[in-house]
Amino acid sequence: MRDQYHDDVTLLTGPAEGPEGDLFDRAAERKLKVEVLPELIRPVRPLVDLRAYRRLRAVLRRLRPEVVHTHSSKAGILGRAAAWHEHVPAVVHTIHGMPFGPFERPLKNRLYVALERWAARRAHAIVSVCDAMTAQALAAGVGRPEQFLTVYSGMDADAFLTPRRPRQDVRRELGLAGDEIAFATVARLFELKGHDDIIAVAPEVLASNPRVKFVWIGDGILRDRLIADLDRLGIRRSFILTGLVPPDRIPELLGAVDAVIHPSLREGLARVLPQALLVGRPVISYDVDGAREVVLPDTGILLQPRDLSGLRRAILNLAADPETRAAMGQEGRIRFADQFRHETMTRQLRSTLRTSA
Image (cartoon, rainbow, N blue to C red; front, side):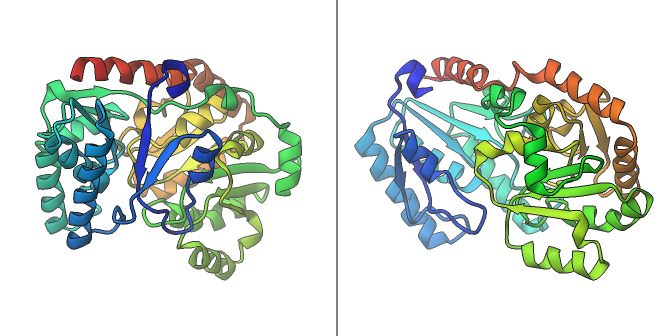
């Protein structure tokens, strides 16, 4: 957006936490302005959060932006409050996923809902990454209908439509034989991401079709425990864990596999779903949040959350049917190439900002 429209953009962020990685090196390569606020941490710490809010206000007074665009729940609440009280002309928030839901305790849910309602009144516009996020927010009394607009998260679609490295070269690096059918999962090794569900169905899947392989792309705090579970079940050799990889390797890794499994229990709209489809790979996903907006009968298999028998059948059915895999992947490329281009997202966001300012 900066290169095309010559905007002066400053990214405000907290420090990197955990083994999931960060984008600081990429930002430096592109000579983006980044300011790290040590107080802006992920856990809720009231005293630290108050300091983060004051620091944000001070930074905004110095920068005097025309637009503040916030992301995530905690940073979004603090950022909207700071921008509103500094009288920024346009305050926009993007909802990537709700902090409240059935996965949280009732007391936390009530607190998060109250905070999101409060913060919504301090934004001129609210962008949802899928229609499902708007519906969930409004059902909880967060925001007003006229504040919302759905803008799908954009990406370099061409990188996925045409991965830079040949499929066979990447498969060889991963140790995949020509007759093996690989199912990738791209996610942090973290709670609610569904890796345990894959482990639960894997023994039966492998007993029925030993040619199936599972490729896990990503890292996280559950890595050692998940590997121990694989060892205990005697199926470790059927799993390939790449660890954390640079974002620009995701297209070639998705191109090397045959389908994608995304059994997460908490998402807005997982980027890996359209990414897989752009590469031409079908997806298996739980029906949570915005998944059904891209996982259609012609592009993949949508399951109820924690439907382990359905997950096992879906893996085996796709593993046994290369024609269906190819047809679903091709349909995904046709349907979603333009919708998920970063140029499309930028155009829609700029239209929102003009309206909000």
